[in-house]
Image (tube, rainbow, N blue to C red; front, side, top):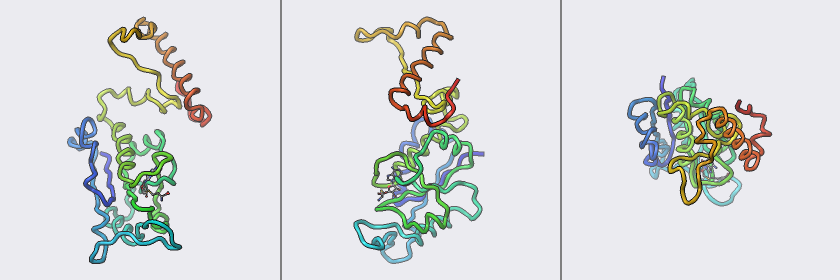
Amino acid sequence: MSFRAVVLTLYPEMFPGHLGLSLAGRALERGDWSLETVQIRDFATDRHRTVDDTPAGGGAGMVMRADILARAIDHAVPEGDPRPKLLMSPRGKPLTQARVRELASGLGAVIVCGRFEGVDQRVIEAREMEEVSIGDYVLSGGEPAALVLLDAVVRLLPGVMGNEASGTEESFEGGLLEHPHFTRPQEWEGRPIPEVLTSGNHARIAAWRREQAEMLTRQRRPDLLESGQPVQK
Ligand code: SAH
């Protein structure tokens, strides 16, 4: 069964964006995954098609209305749909490769893109949305975050990437950052490729890569080593 994504947004023209190109785009054309967008504004009820209102309690900006968003969600996904409902949000749980892998092994995802100051809390709870963050910075809308999440998921779907093995030896997959890469020319600006990589000794190469990966992770992301994730063998 293929991965089916539904994205609820005020800017459906931002999709499929870069996911219509390259490997993800070809997979989309083949039907290895599908992407449906829902214009939240279509579910507004007034003449001006309003989707937001001023924050209760005062303050800057606008808030997406619970009633309008709920109507859009209920229309897009029938009750009992097994796909997780994700709300892109800087307050969410930071997205990890482990969660990406879980999503890729599922039936798809319903992704809500926030705008303005965010979404009325009541609809988040009432529709049991899982808040997902793509990092500790603030975007102007959830759309780029949804594209990032889908990019990470789609490349893991069976048949999407040419070389299946490259999906399992990468950064984060084994709790480590990946080792450095080199390719021809053998020497460039006086810098040779590390000798071990051209030795043809596969055991030595594997040991060197492993060592580099551990060193890089220790230097740059010691938190990964402490996170209790399994370290690759
Ligand atoms: N006032 C909010 C930020 C709103 S940004 C706050 O301070 O938390 C507007 C929308 O952009 C959000 O509703 C969310 O959908 C999206 N967004 C912004 N930053 C994001 C991030 N780091 N990850 C995922 N979505 C994000």
